[in-house]
Image (cartoon, rainbow, N blue to C red; front, top):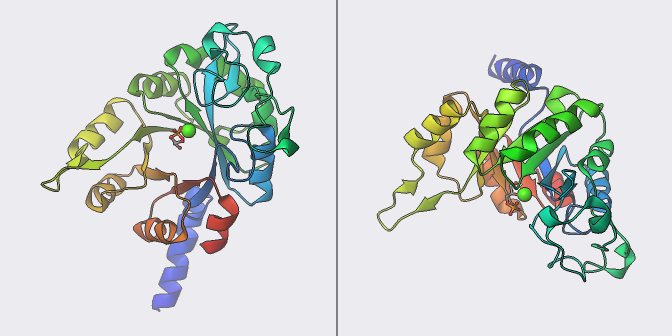
Length: 263
Ligand code: G3P
Ligand code: CA
């Protein structure tokens, strides 16, 4: 009877979510093997079996959304341009692949529209907004212009006001609040479960995306309240297995092939 009940439970879960947990999310694409936040990294992530990709997004001077982590190109290119003070055309002239390996020479910073076109049917993107809510009207337009379904595009952001603005504009798309947990000498975690739940409710977030140092008791309380819990950036198998056992919804990793294969 018990195996039958378990099978029925799993079936119910799959029907409810369409996915088996945890999803494997490629952090900045397959960024262990290809230059972060580029089309080669995203294409490789799909080849490595990722269920979703994660990318960082900022606005250019001419209000185009591009995929880049930092506010300047200093770390990735041989010229230092400030993203918000440069046009898409100027930023497109840069090579952001050579720093990783010469085989990626000539790789350009992609627009969000270009990243969207790589996403296969049924897979997802975690759009991390690295600026403020001024990006939201442009993001809504890009999502509407794409052929992606509502469940394929989710937003993640450390800034609560960005989560709030996105949920107001696109209430049916999921949005997760990014947060880091820290434990003090007395063993008390910050933020607390009460503060997390209050924040998620106030900003209409669908859950949390946290660093991998997860306080299990808080995670259980938050998930029991019906919210999702996602975690970044996990590149070792032991931690991935621990998080799977905890029941979290996704694991973000630079190494999707390794983590997917191990689970
Ligand atoms: O998935 C969230 C994670 O990407 C946040 O950290 O610095 O890699 O953007 P960062
Ligand atoms: Ca990110």
